[in-house]
Every structure is written in structure tokens, then in C-alpha cells.
Image 1 (cartoon, rainbow, N blue to C red):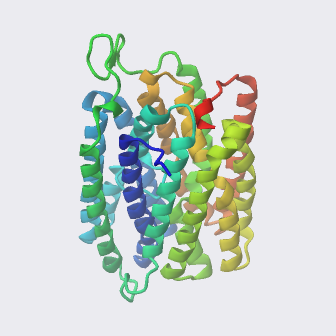
Image 2 (spheres, helix red, strand yellow):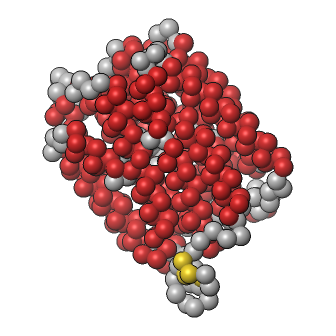
Length: 409
């Protein structure tokens, strides 16, 4: 069977995979690290807020300069930052250092949908497949699978020494060092085809108006950014690190049990995002997004009422079968409704809109937990369901181009 991706797309998928494996491993451990240090709900919310705030800021920076600095160079610098962040945390960083590292955007509480790297990958993959979710589906599926293996590694007996001392957990973040080095090497092997095409003056990344900017698609991108921000605001309440913290606090389960759960979640997620392009070809991008995302949010809210860890785990797994199908379809939708010159900026704006509102989520979640431990889950489900209904209403009013060429069917 012929491999369906080109050379550059393959390198990008490999970069996503190695990063997802590292983040899958550390996202599980981060909750254990914060719990072991005995931080208050507010302190935990502060660290998670710094993580998503750094993701938002760095994504905007990438959108502003990547086409001038070079997408490949920006991608390599990001991965070198990941290696540096892993080294800092592995050295036993105190709380203030964790906050500084988190603000750089090189750590993540998510596996396949995170910050500046996603912005760059989304734009560079468009050179291979801008109009469908085929490549984006494979890209996210492989990333989710790698993230599953990373989460499983956190549960392997002997990986984590006995005891809950924070320094022991911190050293495990050294896994991000080879992740960062490998990603930088992959970036160095990419071809110039992933860069923005030269403008009329022959200068890469420039058009008649200067650096690539939103012009023709400005209103559409702004509307999508606003909608995605609502969804992300709800998602910020229930990041992977928060779920690990919540489940550990409420049900007193071990890190090994959490690692096995998030391994299963990531495996289900991989199959889910791989299936999404098939549904999108049959029903369309937006119907696939809303039709799967809305029921998943009902399941998310129901986790707050789970009487035991097994029930909570089953609900989370059921939710995951549907919740991530909107990731490749959302990425394909953004690349479909903008011109080639606007892709990096459109990806940056829509991604940054998601990450900009997410810093509020962990703080709100920490405050809500003072009312009820599971309150963030319920609120997140309601907010994200509202996004689904608003997106559906917008799509019904706007005629979208057919995103699927015949050769992709």
C-alpha cells in the first residue's frame, strides 16, 4: 500500500508524533507533580494558567513573524525550546521557574492540539492538503497514538520511583530533551516547499501589502476565531493535567492508573480523528464537527456526577470517541476558507484565539472547585455545547466551498 503523504508532510507528522509522545508523558506527570508538592487549588490553577497563556502568546508571535523568519527555522527553534524547558524542569525547578517555563509555550497540557507548533504544522501541511481533512486526520491520529504511548509510559512500573517527592517527578521531564532535539533535526530536513510562496517582489513571505496578513478572509477568520474561543474557554476548564489532578483528588487513584486511563483515552482519540475525514467527506466539515462534538459535551458534564473512578473512566472514554473529531475538520475548515497567502496568519489567529481565553479556564476551575470538586466539568460541558450550536447557526447562514476534491474520495 502506497504511503499517502509526501516527504515534507511525513516529516511534519513525525514531528507531531515525537512532540505528542513527550507531552502525553509529561501531562500525566504534571498533575502528580503539582499534587505531590501540596499546592492549593489556586496555585495549581496558576501553573495551568501560565501554561495556556504561554501557548497563546507564542502562537501569536509565530503568526506574526514565522513567514518572515521562515517556517522551518521557527519550527526548529520551537523544538529547541522544548528541550530547554525539559532540562529546566528536570533540574528540580521551583514554582517560580515552572511559571517562567510555562509562559514560553514550550510545555503543553494537551497532546495533539497545542500552540505555536500546531500553527506552523497546520500552515505547512496545507502545501500537501489544504482543502480536505485527509492529511489532517492522519496527522492528528498519529499524534494521538504517540500521545497514548507517552501516557502509557508514565504508568509503566519502575519508570517512577516509589514515593511522591516532587523532585523525583521533576526529573522525568528530561524526556523532553530528546524530543526537542529530534524535532529540530526533522525541521532541518524539510524542503522550501513548506515556506510561504514568494510575493510579486520575489521576497519569501511578502505580498504587495507587505508581510502576509488577513485581507480577503478577515471577517470569516474573525468569526471563526470568536467561535473557537468559546469552545476553548470551556476546554480550558478540563485540560489533561486538570483531569489527572481531579481524578487523583476525588478518587485517590495512583499515577499508574491515570497513565493507563489516558493511554486508553489517546488510543480512542487516535481512532476518532482517523475516522473524522470519512465522516466529513460524507456529511461535510461543519456537520461532522457539530454532530460529534455536541453529544461529547453532554458526556463530559456527566463525569462530574460519576460515583466511582471506573464510571468516570468509562464516561471519559465514551466522550473521547466523539470529542476530537472536530480537530482535523476544524483545521481543514480554516485552511479551506482562506487564501494561500493568509494560511499562517489565519492558523495563528484562530489558534491564538483558542489559547488566549484558555488561561482563564484553570483559574475559574480552581475557584469552581471551592464550590464543588466536579463543577468545572459541568460548566465546561455547558459552554462547549453553546459553541456547537453557535457554529451550526453560522454555517447555515454561510455557503462554504466544497472541501473535498474527487481524488480524495
